[in-house]
Length: 314
Length: 320
Ligand SMILES: Nc1ncnc2c1ncn2[C@@H]1O[C@H](COP(=O)(O)OP(=O)(O)O)[C@@H](O)[C@H]1O
Ligand code: SF4
Ligand SMILES: [Mg+2]
Image (cartoon, rainbow over all chains, first blue to last red; front, side, top):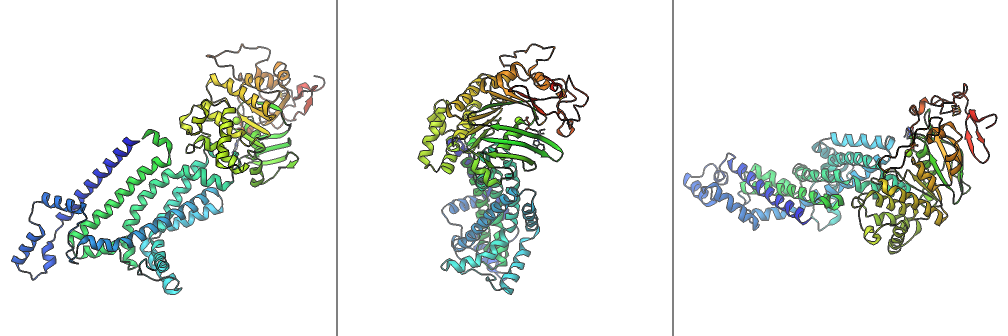
């Protein structure tokens, strides 16, 4: 077990390292001159050269990579070219928004998917199963962008139940949650539909197992058998998909934040790319990648928590 | 007391259990034998209200006078574990792999008997001792994959006994186990039934085990109970041609081979068991029967009293 943890942790760190190399390399071979972007087209050649020197753009690539990584580890991601403030501060301001959206998307995905997936499995080949499968098929087919517009049109513009966009901050939790409802649905409906189907098929597989018959023979209610015996045994494929979906949700915030005018990292990355703001884009891409790698690392650890047989092998 | 009156279980036109009529009284120890597919498991599952969803169940089943024919899942849930419990053939896969076996045994005690977690754990330990689990304290904390087949079967027996059922159904409890512990599990079940005054329905391929564990026997073929009586009498002097086939007691008895220490299983009867839907409407054994009469395939033989024993066969009619 200790060896397993060590091996996985080393793998995790190596992956992050590899990601940082790729992110740095891609960002620094992109065409475009940051100095020109900052100073504008009518800057003098002297001023440009001075700025390039100041930004360290003339240093060897390896030196630049090394100072980027070591500074990043201390929380220093450099200064944004377009906002002219430290990138770390820009990220810190917007991180709560994106985390709120991603977490509420994750909760929505998992809760809805487990309830629908288990309900479909419990009603296998009956109307409830078909209904849930049909709805989830629709949910998968609908593009998030289009769904977002539809939701705004129906629930914000016509019915006026919910705000069409913007985020008031968590100082007013009710208003914050109301503002999150439509973005959450738009962000997570596809993932939830996929996960509901995974849950259903995994649960159906488990329901055929002998130990489920043993649980029924023990006089337990259908509900207890489903939630206490079937679901835990169905979790391994579900957790695998959830890990992948977390990455999709985090990157999905880029589109959703722009549609709903939410002041999060997704909007920041959009703006920074438009502004060719290299340090900010680089820091954000690294951050998103780190979140994805971390999610996978956590999933690896979860397998062992879920299944004692894997712990023995680990 | 469990009373089956003409209980049938069918899948469309295929009849897995045909008009079974049987009474199981407190303390009865009844063996059920017959080839694969003869409906033994279906009989056991019917007594648990656990026939497959696809099955149509007809006839009557009462438990202590309570009508259970057509009873809903909720009514059966009240009887399972507390009135009737069942252990299945395959102990390797019958335990939830994610739960410690002690918790698996304690669960029904907490849920059905209202015991606290500590009381249920203590009771689970008692049960482990009662079923002869080696090192019971440590075993409670183990997961199924850490145990041998015999130990898992003991866990399943402890689980079945937890709520003190009036009837224990053991469906081929030793078939999947190593030869050297079959006898011990068989004797354990017989002893537990005896000590607790619990009825036992012992389904087995193993005639020697049935002989040890039961006082009465029912022989099944093609969904029918074809012969019933006291175990020693039926095994010593089988009346029904099928039972005789099972025992290898037909005119040209081949000696039972003792294969590497395993006690002999059911000897094979010439021919194979036809698919359920292809069985004759009359005697199910017609087509394979060595003494078949002209009307056997079309007319179903009645169960006849042969002086404390019962068998259903046209060849036994008109003076046995
Ligand atoms: N779900 C089902 N659908 C159709 N036939 C079934 C089903 N379950 C069992 N059967 C049939 O019922 C018959 C009796 O099976 P079973 O009671 O398991 O026999 P045994 O335990 O004596 O080997 C078998 O022929 C089997 O194919
Ligand atoms: S009824 Fe006929 S076919 Fe059936 S066992 Fe008796 S003799 Fe054989
Ligand atoms: Mg069987």
